[in-house]
Length: 113
Image (cartoon, rainbow, N blue to C red; front, side, top):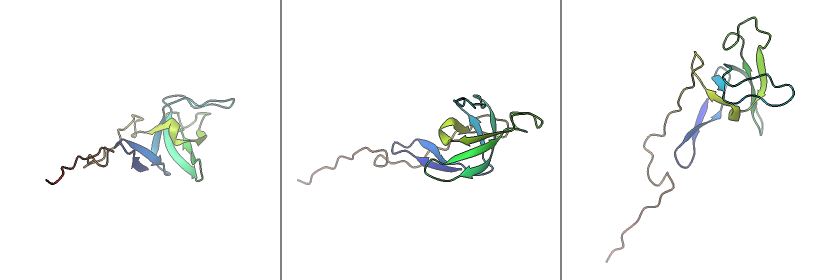
């Protein structure tokens, strides 16, 4: 996964890669919705483009290997969070050495007299 930072220093996942473990933070919507909050699995394919989407294999992770629901398709990074091998969400690393200027703060500069 690729981690990026907002101007205020908060971290977020800007791109998932094949092999990353993710957990649904919201249930899927729509007629064919199958994923529920808390389902988790491994990213097995990524479809690049303007609105990058990916497929997640649930069988063998949050579902049994013989489950009828084996895979969720067309997910976006907004509906998932990274997790560990047990499905527990993991915190993203904080930006180290964030300076006041990086956080969008201005520095007061004294005038020479």
